[in-house]
Every structure is written in structure tokens, then in C-alpha cells.
Image 1 (cartoon, helix red, strand yellow):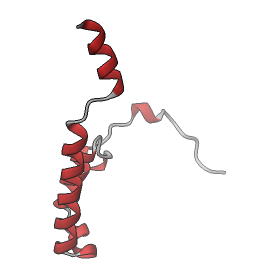
Image 2 (cartoon, rainbow, N blue to C red):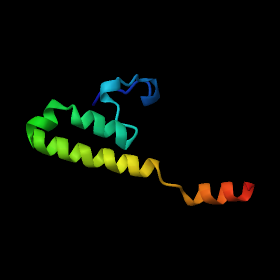
Image 3 (cartoon, helix red, strand yellow):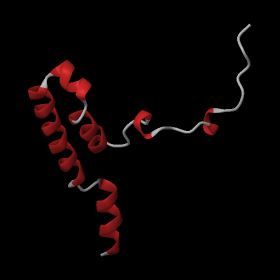
Image 4 (cartoon, rainbow, N blue to C red):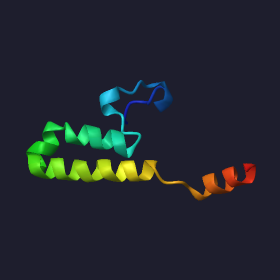
Length: 76
């Protein structure tokens, strides 16, 4: 019989390096600097892919959502 599990997942600390990225920007940053990604995909692909994801992130940051339009047009 396996050993009993003691405690819960919320009690465990999460190391920053093991934590999943919280945004596309953070994921792109980590991917671009990953030696494993560069070894597997090559520098050229990593640079091109990272550049395209940075562009995508910037595009998303500059868009105005329907919620924002409705909310702030009500105020004026």
C-alpha cells in the first residue's frame, strides 16, 4: 500500500523557476532565453518566433475591448 499523503498542495511552496508563465510576454521572455529551446529549435527559430510573439503581445495591449468601449462611452 502506498504511503499516506500528508498536507495539501496549497501548503507547498512554488519555486519561481517551476512556476508557469502568467502572460504571453513572460512566456516569450523565458522561451527566448531558454538554452533548451535554442538547442532543440535553433537560434534562428527562437529569435523569429520570439519576435512574432512580442509583436502579438504588443498588439493585444493596444486594443480596446467591447467592455471598455461600453463602460467609458457611458461616462461621456
